[in-house]
Amino acid sequence: MNKIKRALGILWFLLAPAVIYFLVDRAIVHIDPAGKKDINNPVIWIIIIGIFTPIAVGLMIFGWFAIKGEYDHLPESSDELN
Amino acid sequence: MKPSTIRSVIMASSVGTMIEWYDFYIFGMLAKTISTQFFPEGNATAALLSTLAIFAAGFIVRPFGALVFGRLGDLIGRKYTFLLTLVLMGGSTFLIGLVPGYKTIGIAAPLLVLLLRLIQGLALGGEYGGAATYVAEHSPAHKRGFYTSWIQTTATLGLFVALGVIMLVKLNMPDSSFNAEWGGWRYPFWISLLLVAISVYIRLKMSESPLFSKLKEEGKTSVNPLKESFRHKANFKMVLMALFGAVMGQGVIWYTGQFYAQSFLENSCKIEFEQSRTLLLWAIFFATPFFVFWGWLSDRIGRKWIMMTGMLLAILTYRPIFNTFLTDTAITGHTIGMPADSNSIIKSDTLLSKKEGIKILQHKVTISSFNQIRFKQKRTDTLVLAEGETLYPPLSSAGITDYNKIQFVLKEDAKPVISEKKIPSSTYWKFVGLVFLLILYVTMVYGPIAAFLVEIFPTRIRYTSMSLPYHIGNGVFGGLVPFIGLLLTTTFPADPLVGLWYPVGIAALCLVIGSIYLTNKIDENVDD
Image 1 (cartoon, one colour):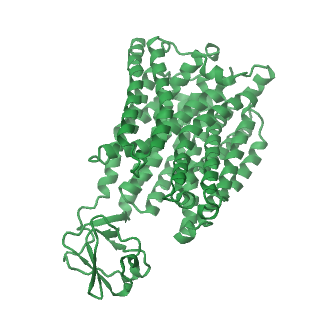
Image 2 (cartoon, helix red, strand yellow):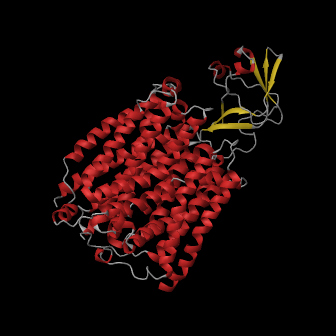
Image 3 (spheres, helix red, strand yellow):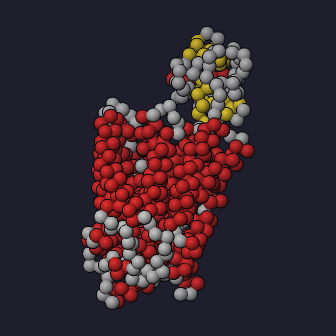
């Protein structure tokens, strides 16, 4: 199981920049000052990309921790977290 | 701890949290009216403020509130922090109901509403973590899932109460009175003050969490909860695991089961207002006890696999369920309710006299207009509508004033433009069952999650550590369900169910991460 956890870490690590790329790409396609739908609104895209980027970075870090084997053993008491 | 004490703890926490959810939802449910009153069309600044009020409150301010109040809860205690969030939420909700409309005070109106909405988002971000932590820290290990599951019912019950209150007000007055500047839409906001006052009174009588009090006495509370939560690798990796392995999937299932389903029934299936709302109310009514059931079961078999099963069922059945909604409400061509003779005359004088446009009720389908109708006034004047054009506003705008003498002649290629449908009783109850299933998945993923989150983190930084992933999962991942749904529908218009790929994809990702990385072991000791 630990090998699977580590191997999948690579996927999570790569997925994060792909998500950011996808959002930026979609924003460029859909932002339209003349449009009336939410997806044409640049403010919404700025908010979404702004909030999603740190989350995607979090996914990258999660992947990195997984690759490094940080999740091979999960803490069994809070002493291990302090 | 005495059973009566734990009952008081659960009640004090749950009632307050439910009221906070109620406060947060009524704004969203009344968004259309609020937008007319405070954010008029054609004003760019008001439009920008409207966007911020809708999007920023959920996406940015909720996680930020989790950080602000989580930190406060770990520093000064759970009781006073979630008392403060309750007062902030109730106060801002009540004040929204008092803000004069744009017509009266101009741009100050949307500015004030935005400010109050942001306070609502901030307060909500701090409430849940406090309530869940407070109840969990009063619970014995073998009943932690059961007791915290009562907190888990509150979000859905808040939605239930919000739906019920709005329906009660709306059905007891004409639309014009409801939507007026000081009309009925403000009542749900005012009611909040009474609800919050009761809840504050109950909460004031409660004591601080015993685990937090013990830490405080021993001088072991955290000095810097934010740093300890997110800059210590050992704890931060658990925050990430909780987010990507559990809360992210739970968030999208929660929103899809309750909000997206309602919006889909109303906008894509065109089911009329009252039916689409009561249908959801019945489904919530039947499904809510299952939050407690799964919480109870999670104390016996562990939290993880109940949540993962809920995600798996959602992934497998979302498309068939939503497809059934579509097919069972589909109108094929214009054969339903349309006269066989293309030159038949539809008599609608009574409806026309109300100047509401045309509503023809046949075969339980309410049709507001057809794409090809000729209006004859005194058999001489004729109006032919273009494809997709509706009959609103009243016909007077088309130069037709003598309503009693108008006849409608349907052209051969006329197609109905459905405004709303009234579904038959058998379909209604079938849909109640399907929405019940959607909410059952919500109960599976959401029922055990408070106990799961509480057990991951140590007491000294629990409030902060569990609040952030919870509000990112629900506020951001869940809150994006309608927007990403719209994005996908616009990109791939051929598939009416394409919007479901977002919750299905996120839930699938979360299912894989959760199944592989989470443990099913219950942490017996949260007193550390």
